[in-house]
Each structure stands twice: as structure tokens, then as C-alpha cells.
Length: 236
Figure 1: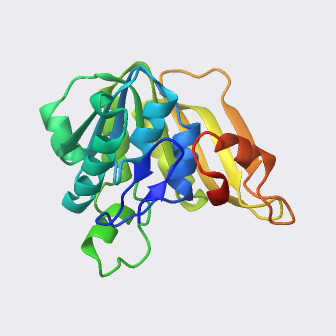
Figure 2: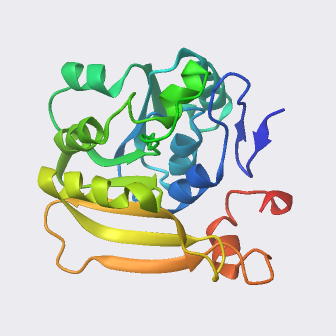
């Protein structure tokens, strides 16, 4: 069964990674522009959320996994934005060889970030979840090279890899523009960081803390407002 958003559907019969909270948060919070690259599009949910948010955007979505490409291809074709989304079955490494010049003002990626845990028996799920398939250094340096000056790079990562990711980002030349610190509820520590990094200097980086749920476990007003244009009421 497809996952129904308000303006599009996500078929996910083949992809190893299904629609989840990380992609929802990143799709709603990430920076956008006129020329967007979605690295590791998976089912295509981020590309479709960006197509909805930015009506003038031309989006390139790349994906290494053949099964995920099948889902993304169907999801893009059935959306009303199919003419604005170009899907390529290619790794970032190969894409960089074929396109060595900066050509995007915005890049988004929900990257693999498990690098100290055991890899699972499903090779496709391992590839989608573990940094062995796309190390942070390659991802960050690749994004930097593909972005035009002052371009923005948005990712969603857990706190346990935040410092590693930021160290490589700063060494590469990125500055933090915005750090959305996402907590499950007020009593818990951060669950995810949605980072917006700029290729260039940021004079006043912004840190904001938000909770997805209230203390009584109901959805917070912040989360409901964030997702009101995407998720159907019963799935909020």
C-alpha cells in the first residue's frame, strides 16, 4: 500500500528504506532554491516535498539502488511535478565524475549515518543506512563541489555523529546557517539535527530547539504546523 501525502503518494514496495520521520522533518525544514539536487533520493519523498514547496524549482534526484529507483520512478511519474524532477540511477561518486562543475544552489540529503553498528543482512538496507556506502567526507566534499557560491546543503543526522559531520563540514568550507535541534518530547535529549550548511561565511548561525510531542505524548503545535501541508491528519 502506498503512503499517502496530501498532494502525492509514495509507493515503497521495492526500496529498502521506507518513509519515516527523518525524511518528513528534512523535507519540511530544508532549504530550497531553483536548482536542487537530492542525493540518495530513495523513494523520492524529499524531491516531491521540495517540488511542492518550491513551485519554480528544477530538481535532480540521484539514487544508487536499483530497487529504490523503481519506486522513485513511479512516484515521480504519478505526481503533478514530473516535468520538474529528473531521476538518475547513479551514485554520487559517479555523478561527480560526470558533472564536476558547480550547478546547484541547493542540495539535500538524508544520508546514511550508521558507522559503528553491525551491518544488517539486507545489502540494500545496509547501503541505505551505513556510511560505508557514502562516507561523510565524500558526501560533504561532493556537495561542496556541486554547489554554487552561497549555496545551501541540508541534512538530517542524529546527535551521535553530529561532531564528526560538522568537523568535516567546516574543514571543507561550510558554515552552519541553521541547526534545528529536534527532540521527541521536552523530557528527552535531541533525537535529530536538521542542519542547513552554507558554502560561504555565516555571521549569525541559528540554533533552535523543537519538540515533536508534548509532555502528554500528543503532537506538539510546532510539529502539527510544520507538517500541515504534507501529512494527512490521521498520520500526523
